[in-house]
Length: 143
Image: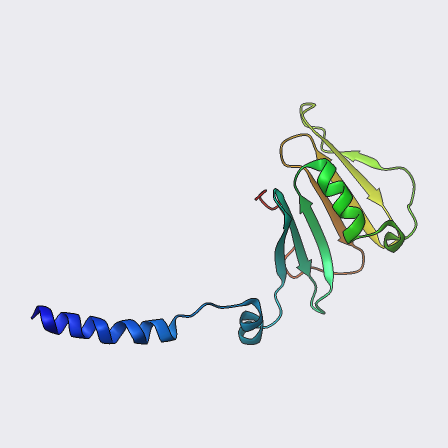
């Protein structure tokens, strides 16, 4: 009886190994289509979440991590010249028990929100005129 189980097990393992293989991003896109969101880890402690509209364009982008690092990355990912004209001074938002700060900057093409001071710093860009299929509601967890 034990030999029969061993024989069946030995036959089953190659079949399982053949059917369960690693899936790459390319394979998933070929099978499922274009993703509505992606998360990147450009550096230790930093995550960048992109959400897309129906045309596959980024509609919002959130960078989470240590403020000094993410501020530099934000200028590389969405350069100031691509944001368009800045409309007026920034507006403060989310003053919660003096624990943190939030500022919103209205540009011609994007709204940029900066939130920092509560161990979950993030900078978010919301691209105007684009509707996300999966809008960001919460910051991505810091890796």
